[in-house]
Amino acid sequence: MAAPAAAALRAGHPWVFKEALLRPLAVDTGQVIAVADEDGHRLGWGLADGDATVAVRMLGRGQKREFDAAEVKKRVVAALKRREGLLDDGVVETQRLIHGEGDGLPGFAVDRLGDWLVAYKYARCVEPWLEDALDAVMEAAAPKGIYLQDRVRSVSAEERRPKAELVRGSVAPAEYTVHEDGLAFVVDPSTPVSPGLFLDLREGRRIAETKCAGRRVLNLFSFTGAFALRAVRAGAAEVVNVDAAARSHARCRQNLAASGLDSEAVEGVAGDAFKHLERFRQKERVFDFIVVDPPPFSNVDGNVFSALRHWQELTEAVAHVAAPGALVLAVCNAAGLAESDFLNSVGRGAAAARRPVRIVGEYGLPPDFPVLPAFTEGRYLKVKLLHFA
Image (cartoon, rainbow, N blue to C red; front, side, top):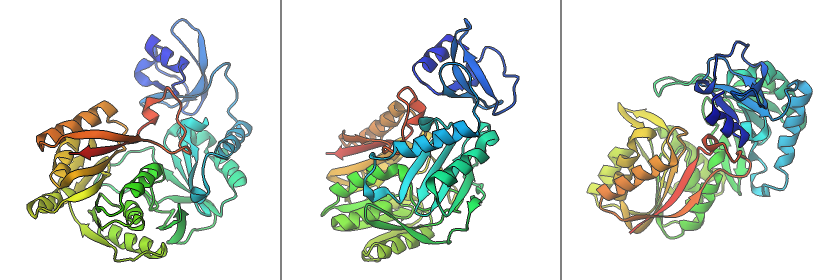
């Protein structure tokens, strides 16, 4: 292995990229292998992942050991134990139980949604021990059932992922209610992408709720309206959701009603966010608090948005509808967009709109999404609270 990659592993980085290998791997995907530097010094042991970009996912330091059912179970139990005392009662029903590399189970994650769990497979090297992991999770967490999403193959915006597969226990209702911090959300664990609530953005939602009282709130790319519920409960003067899918607005109304809030408290606007931002600008309609949480990639009526390329244009459009002194919660979950590039795009967009902007708060993943210190790729979620003068 090349020297820079070896140095990263010594610091605790859990991945060996394909280009760092001194020679191709001649082992089966999922096989446990020893990892050494170019001088033959042992660095640890990991799972080979064939021709994937991440060629080896590390399991630990020291001598190579067996990654058998007993070891998998040990790590599953430790992951659940690790969360004890980290989370408050408000998220008992909605939390990440296993977070891949952060819990020593690379390429594998599990979310709790009430009585059902959703597991995610992010790498082919998970396949040899997947059944052992599911058995261990079923025993340790005791859910009514587990659904599995296969995320190994990436899909374009035009494709649809298959629905999650029931792999353990009983079928979940198509719609049932879970809670986060006292608010209710109608979810479906079998859906292809998100059951209806993104658990990793919990800290952003909590911060938003503390800032919305009396403000005019715009929630862009609103999905099922989790930020809108926080704003309504906080006592916002008005709340507007913008999302491409009309069904997202219907689900937001369901969530409001289930939470004991006025189901008509939020104005739902369907369609392309850029078009609606321009309409707001033309009508001189401005907002005091704006949530900007775009998907990494989308295609709405032929209008393509890519977080890697379009954050500058998005920031400029948002700046034109931000009232003087407005706060903007800018959320970027594109793992491929470096934080520096994200912030430079935000800065250029604000400059194009001739609006001075400053970062007044920074947030990331909640404690049930643990990340190894050297694993910069694992800190994919970037949440910045911006102040527009």
